Length: 492
Image (cartoon, rainbow, N blue to C red):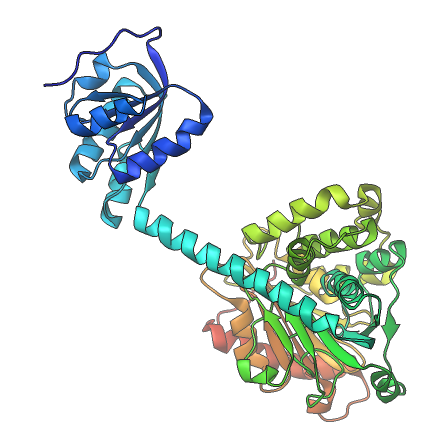
């Protein structure tokens, strides 16, 4: 028989637990820290007596009894945690019927029950095995990343001399800020015995990227054909950030001995044999997030300049947390935020735009062609290749566009940039399949690029003429890969 409800000073209770087996008891112990009223309902008299002996308020009731919620206090939060899935489902329905404003968290006994419990009105349905699995994987990843941070620190502690930190061609804020952070870790770990050179090839063309380097007064060394060999000889160690291997979107010869690689782009494992330290996490939104995690794990003081650079690097590579963003990226951004110079960040994100950029974007808009939600545009000859991804970023926002492909030609290569909103397609894989045989290609599900050297084609004096001649067969590689039919293209 159920207990009579004891005299209470209130007809309300903060927490109510229905079913107090092992799961319920663990929840009870967590809630006890809140020092809020808790009422426990269980059908087992012995269990209830044990709970009372521990000074918990507990009553003997069958949670399947449809009348109990009419005589019990009004709960703010109800945990339904019995091992009877039908009783749990009935209890959810009854609680929501009698106390519709109460929060209901319920235990699912199997995956099939999850949707039924949610349909019945549960605010949260938890399958313990799934929760355990996610916690286990999260713990594993956290331990692994922590171990990697300590491994890097230990390796750098034995280094002295000069470390050349190689950025990818035409570096962006993610690469640059990651290199800055690696310099800080190297100096700290080595006790000042290791100095760094941040080295890049190509151009820093995007107006925000130029503002980023100028306003933060970042010291970079630009490599040329004339000084490659001399510069590398000056380096006792070589590190690559935001690029996956020697010769992959950087000026290094493929057989260059590399000591450190840190990146968030997926590569083949065999490409990194012989490297002392490798940390490649394709799941992360930015390499700057990985370096921020190192600084946090190693408890290294982050000055305002480095913190501002890293936060901007994460923001830029995730497009203000709107693409390829993970919870870890957000956590590390939150860690950096109070350490940054907000006024400087605002100046970086509001730079002036060059006439060349405006004209190139205008040409991209004018030349756009649309087919079944895919937009293709020829930007023509560009001195600053960064306007090509800018054009793709701009045009993918047009109504009815799922994927935007912008392409243009520079002094030494054709650049193709893709932006994608279609969740059915991984545009990085498509670009890789379509273009890796004739150049470098790859990327993420929502953003990707390809670079095709001009030495792949016959010499033609006019680059515009060359681009016009080969654009159609190049784009056919892309459309064939995605299976896009040869329907008539209509200008948007």
